[in-house]
Image (cartoon, rainbow over all chains, first blue to last red; front, side, top):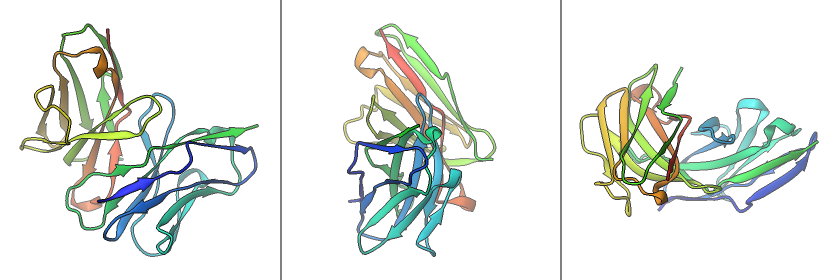
Length: 115
Length: 117
């Protein structure tokens, strides 16, 4: 079965400092991996995805994530955090060849960037 | 492109009434739509998957007679919460998967907050 773990409920970082939001996955095949961000009372906004190719994926708003197959991780990173980055972040996974199955989400990590 | 809308964005209803939530893909044809439910400070839980023109597939524990899903066209899916009760109060989010051109992406609507009094 496919699953996603986000080990941290909350991440606090000072504005201007680098941030990391952790994600590990468990799938029996090759995964498609995604990061989404959610602002209060809003739907999810797509940040980036890993499908194949370069393990370092660059996405929206200066975010990037590195696919690490040996560690089964897909941590989200940003070199310099902004207060406006404060939101709820979800990691998601889908099987590479799973037909019509939906994304499976982690529980979410709340990022708080302090000025 | 790839915009998904939901209507209404929020709704308050009395216990025992039914509520219909619409999900539309505005600039693409969605062969598959998904309905998620999100409780406060929790992740998205998949409720059902619907393909245009066929019956929805419900996740374990989701009552299909209570949460009626109709995927009438490639751009519209509806979720009807029948005989709503306070425990049905939640944030409902739909998602649409683009057809063959961008098969891996799911696009999400802005969500509908349902409050049942």
